[in-house]
Structure formats: C-alpha cells, structure tokens
Length: 128
Image (tube, rainbow, N blue to C red; front, top):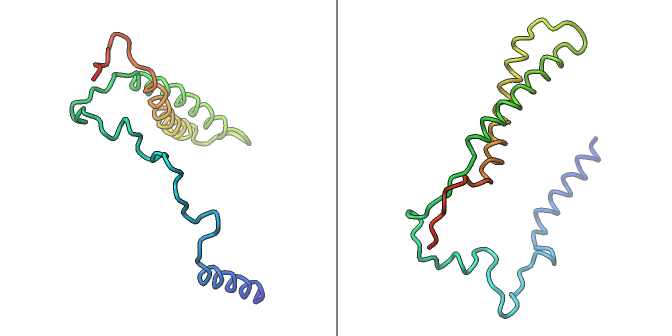
C-alpha cells in the first residue's frame, strides 16, 4: 500500500515538474498559402446581416412528437417488463410512468434532431 502511494506521488511530481510539451504538441508554422481551418473565407466576409437571415422551416416538431410518442411507448413497455422480470411487480404504474417519461423525453430530443434535417416543402429560402 505504501509502495503504491509512493509510486503515485512520484508520478504526480514528475508530471508537475516536467511540463514541457511533447514533440507532437509543439506549434509549427503553417505552410505558405494555407488558410485558417477555423473560419472559412466565404463566411467571414458575409454581406448579409445575421439578424435578417432567413432560416428554412423544418419538420423538427413533427419528428419530436413522433419520436417522443414511439420511444415513450417502448420505454413504458420495457420498464413494466423489467419490473416483472424476476417476479410480480408491486407498482407497475410507476414503472410504466417512469418509462413513458424517460423514453418520451429521449425520443422527443432525438426526433427533433432528425426531423430538423428535412426542410418543409413549398418554402423557399431567399438567395442573398
């Protein structure tokens, strides 16, 4: 036990004293003609003001409702089956409610993210 603490203290002391960056972590000069990967040039000088930009409408709400309902129902069924796994369940209503809430919230978020990837038909995004 003492040997393990001594070894750990030694490793911590070495890590604190030798704080030089490793060879792969040292900064290098960018090659000539390289652009910054952080902000693309097309977006850095956009003439359109961000307050007037039109965001296309998507199916995020429909996806959230469908995902919440489907995963909520599956969560309720799973939690009741899990409660009855090794014997009769004393409080299956609480298990069903917990599964419905947990599955519904998870399905709502996942469904909103999936539905948000599809634009609604008949809505055109104005070109700049």
